Length: 368
Image (tube, rainbow, N blue to C red; front, side, top):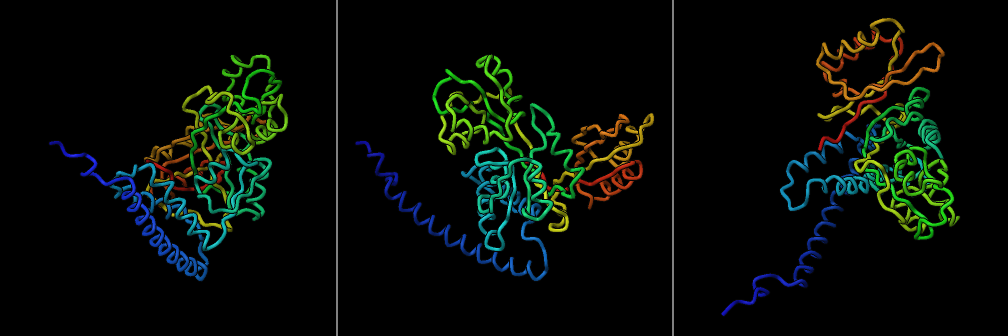
């Protein structure tokens, strides 16, 4: 006589009862954490220290990933705890975050992914406006795109680092899945495709094959293109599924980006008078912009201190200085933190060789 397999396993109802009990335990524990966060907030106010410390939050998440024994996946730990820390941080003080809007942009998604959803959202009409809001103190932080894996650097963001006092305290990278959105669930009758110029470039081949005679109309953001497409049936947009939901559009064609691994890197910026430089977390990046006198061997000499002190350069970009003299600014990312002796020595010697030197920020990076 075989045993009924159901008799050896809990039924669905009993499992739900157990999950409900665990959820109540979690809520009690989270409220204990929130109460401790309130006490931390009071101490920070007395000390005059910042409510948001990206290096501390990175260390918390790294520590939890290290001890996680499953079955919860390791890559699920970070977003869960970012939301927990975001909700607790909001009890201390509201965090105002500016980003390229309107609702539904990848910049908004990056902001929510980095800070969690318990923030005061400040969507802006342009990247310039994000920098202005953060520079003027209307926002505590700004989130700006700096590089795309397909189209390269976002030159406007790099140029604005030169002309504003903001510096970088964090970064986040986002998988960019572009979709063709429209009011009508059809490719027929489209007169123009609206999107940010970088998004149009990221989808150049797909658009050339499927909509070869349709106008490509640049707008301030992909979400703005989606908003316009929601008002006019002759328009389509290239944007995220989040934008499709926001503006009631059909995903006429999913994943229309030419590179299936398309990613965009975002910088988290703030004013140095309102937020301290993050302390070393153990896996940091230091960003700077420099220029050298236009003479033979100047760029080589600029890089010698990095080799001498064993500091790795992870990024090197050049931008015209717009002086009319064929001079350039060089944007450099280094591995490490200025608190490390070898990084400090390399930066000191590098500064001495440069005609212009500006530290753009040092911040923890996600190595997992």
